[in-house]
Length: 320
Length: 314
Ligand SMILES: [Zn+2]
Image (tube, rainbow over all chains, first blue to last red; front, side, top):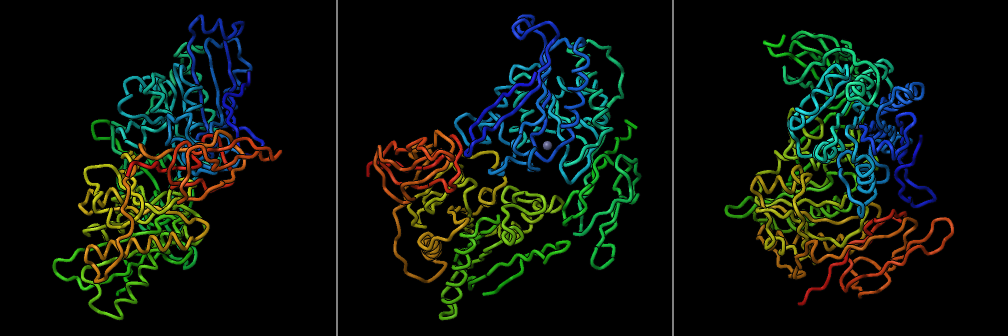
């Protein structure tokens, strides 16, 4: 059932809206569902208008649910495009304001448009038991399917992430600016919220999308929201068992990787070259600083000095 | 005066980003050093212009009188020329803001490195001035902005002689600003805020240039007698009335910044964008001076249209 869930008047003959597709257990209406206290999960995407992997995930999941209505035991709300103006215009932030929606939660009703949108989203999704916020990196970097979480919520979130068949779980320290994210706001208010980062901006990576949909179904089975068997999907690598190395460009130019994303690399292995299209010369050869997995790799080739080229995860000795 | 290349960044295809500083003075013992920075984003054109006018003024005076400057003045009118030269606000490749990256990181992302190199060049000064614009779409009378912290120097800010000194509460995002990092490093730092994204307003630019000259002369960095300027009012959110638009549509202001208004006075109108009907009359809710005004004809619900500094008994 498709519902409009947020209406804010725009200057010229249009309302800003967020739409959701709500799935309920068969033969129960919303009052009965509330009566029975069934669990509710909200799956959101499109906070950043240049990230599209979540669009395909939402389609695939809704398609499966449309064909498996009898398996639904809870409320499943799917919001593909929170920043609907951005999604329809290849704009990462909220257009007109140039403000990153994921840096202004929880938002306020009587504040400027981006803040009203944030407030409306939190109001709408509050009360969910669980939420999944699907991101796809940005247009610059390709990411392995991963769940990111702040260390302060690790105890409640890590067991859920392990059911998702995801490759990597990155547990980071509390960072002040990340307190204004959707996930931090929801977690602080009692909705267990996982952030998925995968693929790359402006594109879809079908195999990642298929795999995440299976992971989400398995998580919902584990939570009792779907009546399907829980299966053993692959265990994620956890960031706490190793170290993340950052490779930043030392020169400006065109970055051409010589290693594929998600390859195992050894210390000193070549990752790629920064070349000059004008001179025809190699400006910089980029080598791995450690033995590990190339879990982030630059997709957008133009780089300045400082641009992130890759991230490598290396296990600590006792976790190999 | 020396025009110095402070640092340079190579671009893959366009010209290098060459950030220049204009250094003046005789570095006489016992006189302070001041650094002035503008143009960290590509919309701070008014700030760039004011800083450049100060370069011009000092150069003329120094040519006439080699002893005109006692201390040291370093002026960096523009940092982010790449954005200025293409009508963008932030760093053009990745849309990041240099002015949230301080103190910078020499092994980090591009804008962290730019912030690092800039901060290295200016951190050891007694005084630091950032000339910046507002993030929102608002035109304001030039004012001094200070972040409310142990470091803030209200008395010092009064020597600019601008009409208002606005103190704002510290927010997490301020931790990466040049203003705040200068203070943490031990400089007395002030931000001059005014706009001019689309037009330059001569009177406002003159006010800012006068304020800069007044400040450096009061601190004896230059040998010049100046007028006293305004006796600045210190304002915070408590004595500023925020007026919002209840409707979206097309906005037409009735008053200008710097104007005194009376309680109940009509100050703006919001029209329906298709039918042309009046959707909302906007009135002042107290007596005061219009310090800021929304600067775009397209308006959203709950947008702040006016900031009115309320009269306090004086
Ligand atoms: Zn994102």
